[in-house]
Length: 595
Ligand SMILES: Cc1cc2nc3c(=O)[nH]c(=O)nc-3n(C[C@H](O)[C@H](O)[C@H](O)COP(=O)(O)OP(=O)(O)OC[C@H]3O[C@@H](n4cnc5c(N)ncnc54)[C@H](O)[C@@H]3O)c2cc1C
Image 1 (cartoon, rainbow, N blue to C red):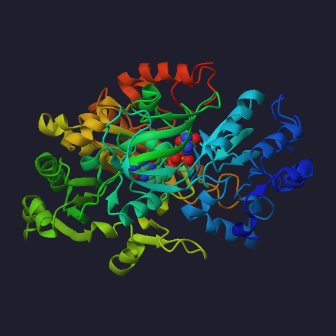
Image 2: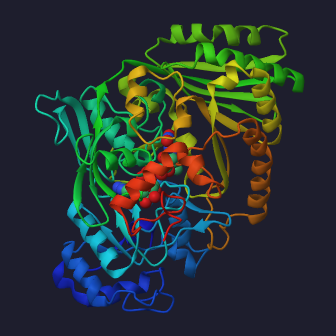
Image 3: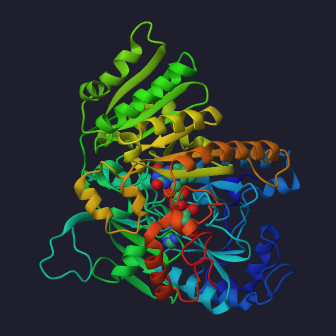
């Protein structure tokens, strides 16, 4: 039986299903135990069968028993069903369709995916509130999963009740949105309200159709309302439009007391601030998010390719020229995305431009690329400029016609026509991590200490390659974007940052516990060591700079300061106010170290 035919198991078809359905489901449940009372390994105070059935009734039959996506492999790891299921799990949207799956399968010495014995397949804030009440009243660990993209495994836990928001994907467009509680006469703005499970691909599609743009992430399958937004969220065009969190006008959120609250700059302003950067699963469960919509830009484009240096000395020269070129030419709202420095004397470009023609983009790069491309320069330049009408950025058909290798269409039948992911993201599907490090890179390194920056890049990239992602630093961003972002709880260090440095190591696809498909521990350990060694050079060169909480190490020391800087204390105050008993607790979340 293949993955798609197995799906998640409903506890019962509504109130009539009764407890029999609960036990009938348990044979396929790999979460352990029967769910009735305190099964072996379950907490002693585990709710009774009738408690669960009462919850099932309250959520209209939407209590389900999630199934491990690799359950077929447990009995026959070499069998056809297992092979078929593992193949399917190379598709990020398959993970999202299954309550028991997560995009990452684990992290060395940190976590591996656990399947909750029960999940509320929520369809409304009321369903979420029922789950929150149940968890609070029965002292059951609560976890939330939207798309399941979290790197740190904060979307799953053993012996937990999962709130699964995947089905909450309504999108409503407003010509003139005014937040609840705004003073009379407040001018409305165009906006989209997206349900908690909405993916950026869907939000972009709805915005584009209306001639609008909302600022989200680059990855099509990441969530537009969950951890991305609540952890700040950067996309290709963040130097023009700011973070995802900065674009939020209003949340509907269920807090630990089971209340459905509306949070915006007028209602619950502290909670609103905290939800915009303070991290997912910490202050409540967001049911929907209203996003500011901008008029759709007209032009974008990409600069992609490789520059190879002939030897070590030429590589250092290449890095030096890039460090000189970047602040003048690229640290502005027209540019985004990343440059990769490799350990083989190559530099890879993967940048985006906004509202420039191809000729203008080429002219921007000419002072850097032309001398490198000259005969006898000691460099090989293989760089492509591609202009893209903005309305086609999230249009699979356009990509299939113009750059088919860049996209992977969801191969399953009966999926939306435009459902696809970037080929470059395939390496993160079913990924098992051994390291993930990030650090804000202040603009002053380029302008005041360029020699030190060159040395840092060269020395660290000798050991392991890494990316410098300029769209994830707000120095040089548009003033309106900065103004919005200053109202959020984003790490203050991001404002002076030209970019975010990211160095990571993963094996994909890899499935801990699935014979023949497990991650190679020796490889994981050695790549972790390599990252540790290389990243210590970066950390030493950038003391006191924080990390981006959504893309950081599971083992971050001093995580409060690293993730939120001086904002931590205020975030903790809000946490104490809205969740005094710490119902929402995730690894390295605000207040997670308190009782
Ligand atoms: C392939 C890939 C590409 C990425 N690209 C980018 C990028 O371009 N820019 C960027 O900034 N980041 C990016 N990220 C990182 C991303 O921001 C984080 O992984 C983020 O946590 C994803 O949030 P999610 O809601 O989609 O995932 P989930 O795993 O569902 O949720 C993440 C966290 O938020 C919580 N949560 C989810 N929904 C809710 C809710 N409704 N209410 C409260 N808490 C909730 C979860 O419990 C979990 O703790 C990427 C990640 C991946 C895997």
